[in-house]
Structures are given as C-alpha cells and as structure tokens.
Amino acid sequence: MAAKRSGAQSKRSQRIGGSLQSAQEPHSEQPLSLERIVATAVELLDGQGVDGLKMRQLADRLGSGAMSLYWHVDNKEAVFDLALDSVLEYRGPPQTVESQDWRGEVVHMLEDWRASMLRHPWSASLLPRRRLGPNILSRLELLSNTLTRGGVADADLNVAIWSLWNYVMGATITRANFNLSDDDMAAAQQRLTRLSERYPTIERTRLLLDNDWDGAFRKGLDSLLDGLSPR
Amino acid sequence: MAAKRSGAQSKRSQRIGGSLQSAQEPHSEQPLSLERIVATAVELLDGQGVDGLKMRQLADRLGSGAMSLYWHVDNKEAVFDLALDSVLEYRGPPQTVESQDWRGEVVHMLEDWRASMLRHPWSASLLPRRRLGPNILSRLELLSNTLTRGGVADADLNVAIWSLWNYVMGATITRANFNLSDDDMAAAQQRLTRLSERYPTIERTRLLLDNDWDGAFRKGLDSLLDGLSPR
DNA sequence: GACCGACTCGTACGCTGTACGATTTAAGGC
DNA sequence: GCCTTAAATCGTACAGCGTACGAGTCGGTC
Image (cartoon, rainbow over all chains, first blue to last red; front, side, top):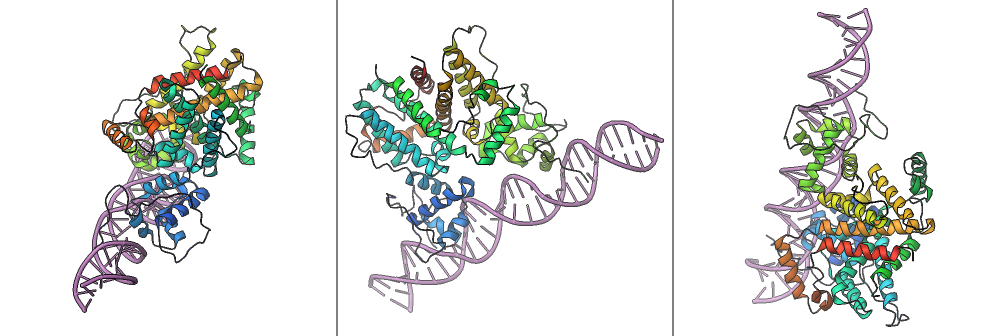
C-alpha cells in the first residue's frame, strides 16, 4: 500500500539545474529519477513535438514501465512544466560585455532566449500556457534590472517589459511553427502567386517567403527598443 | 458505396463569410452544413477551450451522429482551421477615420484583431500553428497597404509587418492564457511575496499583478510604431 | 524472522479520433 | 407507380491515449 505523495510536487523535487544532457541510450538499468525523466522528455519532445510525447513511449525509452513515472511526477502536465523550465536557463551575458552597455545586455539576453526556444521548438508554444518557472522569472528579473539601469522609469517599466516579452514570444512562436521544408516553400509560392490578384502587396514584397528571420528579429527588436528608450 | 470526397476540401467548400451566428438550440432537425458545424464549433470552443472540443459532443449539439460530421469536414484539424478563420474577419475602419490618419488605421485594425481573438481565447494559441486563412491574409494585405501609404519604404516593409505581427500575437496569446480568477490572483500574490527576496525588482513593480492589459497593449504598440516610423 | 517505506509495474477503465460499411434520403428518368 | 444513382447519415468497432488501482519487489531496521 504505497502512499502516493500529494502536495505540489513529488518528494523528488530537487533542483533541475544545468546538467541535463544524456546520450540516447534506448534503455538502461539505471534507476528512474526526475532528472532522467525530464532529460528524456526533452529528447522526445525535440524529436516528435508536443503531440509526440506519450507517457508509454517515455517510459520505454527509460527502460521502465509506464506507471513508474507517476511515482516521480504528478501527471503529464508536470512533465511539460519541468521540461519547459529545464530548457530556459540563462547563464548571463559573456564577460566581454561591460556593464555600461545595458542595451547590448538586453539584446543578448533576448536573443539567447529566442535561440533557446528555437533549439526546442515545442517550448515556444508551450510557454505562454504554463506557470512561470524559476528560470523564466530570473530572466524577467534580470531584464527589469537592466532596463532600470538603462534609465527606464519605474512607471514605464512594466509596459517596457511586457512589450519586449510580447515581441519575443510572438516572434519565437511564429518562427518555431513556420517549419518551411522546400516542399512547403514551393507550395506557399504556388499558393501566393495563385492569389496574387487578391493580395497584391504582400505578394509583391514576398512577405511570406522572406526568410531572414534572424535579421528581421534583430531589426524589429532594435526598433522596439528605440521606441521604448527614454528620450 | 458512398465515395468520400478526396481533395483539399470537401465539396461543401463554399464561402464561410460573415453571417455565422446561431442561437444555442441544443439539437434541431435542420440538415447539417459546414456553416452550422463551424458556428457550433466556435460556440463549443468558446465554452470549453481547445481541449474541450470533442467530435462527439459537437455532433450531439448539432443533433446528429458523430460520423456525419466527416462528410462535411476532412477531420478535426479542419474544424479548427475553419473555426479560426471564421472568427478573424475584419470589416475595416469606421467611416469617421479619414484616410489621412494611416497610423490610426493601423492601431484600429490591430486592436480589433486583438479584441477578436480575446473574444475567442482559443484562437490566439491556435493561430500561429495553422495555415493562414483568407481573413488573415486580408488583414496583412491591409496592413501592408496602410504602412506603405504612411511612408514606409518597401525595403523596411516586411520587417515592420512582422514586428507588428509579433507584438500583437505575443500580447494576445499571453493575455488569453492569463485567465486570472480571484483565486489565481491571490495565489500569485502569495507566491510572489514568498519569492520576493529572489526576484525583488519584478516584485517591487508588481509586474505580474499589473492588470491594465489594454492600456499596456496600446502603449507598447505606440512605442513600437514610434520605433518603426520613418524618421 | 517481522516490519516498513520507497519504488516498480501489469491490468483495466473510460475516453478519444475516425475507418468502414450499412442504411436512409432526395432527385430524376421512365 | 418503380428503378437507379448519388448525397448524406450514422452504428459499430478499433487502436491508442492518460492514468487509477492495487499487487509486487527490494533494501534497511529492529
């Protein structure tokens, strides 16, 4: 008669810190642990996407029975929460960046944020729907500090933070879901030219085919920071 | 031997235009139709959210068997696509807005976009993952035109459009998923003060409790437009 | 030995989307 | 009237999902 633990998080709620890599050993005789579960879930999510993560498959990869997972984890939702947060750690700006350059630090952190999520495309669509984990809160705290250091008044701070958040989230979610294989590109091209008389302008500027996503992200971010900076 | 239709869209692919209201008659003897299916799907989505839409329940509401839906619709994904696009129609700016005020038109269209999605919160998280329907493309076309009229050069146009798109999507998705009941608010409050020494700045400015979402959206949008406007 | 908590997992249940094929209904042609 | 054909409906069935439940295993302590 094993008593399932009840509260917010199973007793195995240690820190999920940084060392979450693991080779792709399909099965192994190591004991189950939160760390292994989360790391393997991330692998699976990277490979199959959000809908591709099944508890049974996750257990298979770990060499265990499906129901064993539930000793370490409350339910599938919790797996998502943990996997998401584990992927969003931020190590801070490189040492070459001096603390004078607040704007550079903001850009660096946000580009790193976007890059982290694009490395795990499932994380982008997941993030807005879930409780903000410690790694996310840390990034917001850092952003808040840096902006303050840059001269943004307290009264304008929240608007600035949310504007940057909105921009980064929108850009990353859009990019992560725009997985353009060559076939897709061809299809989009065809579709567009077929509709060119109905949407002449966006066809002319090739809005949907413009694929310098990184550059566009950076430019838009610059514009937004221009608009937000104290004048 | 009924031949299921194959191609892109079942033969019932008429325009889904504007008149998509329907009272909440739980069952009725009217025949099934794409329009009724989509309208009822929207009702259900509004009430239960994305995960709450089940084909059986949808059929029940329509007073039909579950499998009857599949004559009109390829699969559940198609229901999502149709429901999403049906909700994003734009009727254009009011007549009081004169064509001089390009920036006002942009703001109006984008605020209407956000409002439409917040009226159907499921649509926000759905949009980035799906093919762009005609109503969305029309909005992009309009945006493109208006910006050009406002003096944005072709070379900067795509960056401007995507920046605005990113901002609006990020803001709307975030807002739509932040459904703060009073209980949630209380919980967040508690959680924050408990963590106040770890995240002092965002606690001080009450970032997560600031609930003037509409005002913040407008202010951030203004800043972004400031940054994007030709100097 | 007895006991106990930590942990694992086989089985089973209810629910999902939907393939398949039988059935009903509507519309013409004669 | 009756026959044929296509459009539309739906009952049944199946595989796959998350997970509740309870039995089973293991390694310490007394």
